Image (cartoon, rainbow, N blue to C red; front, top):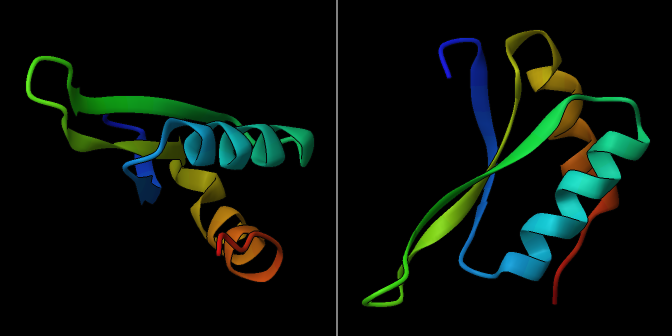
Length: 68
């Protein structure tokens, strides 16, 4: 995970999947990192991208993805 940086966090798996899929559609390398504890149901999911793609990923997320 040394060459990967987190660009989005959420406690909802469906939001993490939407963000990951959107970034991959834009030809970025995105993965979901599961930091949710399955026994106690707390924690979150992170979307990570390669360090070279961080700025582009953040811009795309801020401009194009809204959860309300």
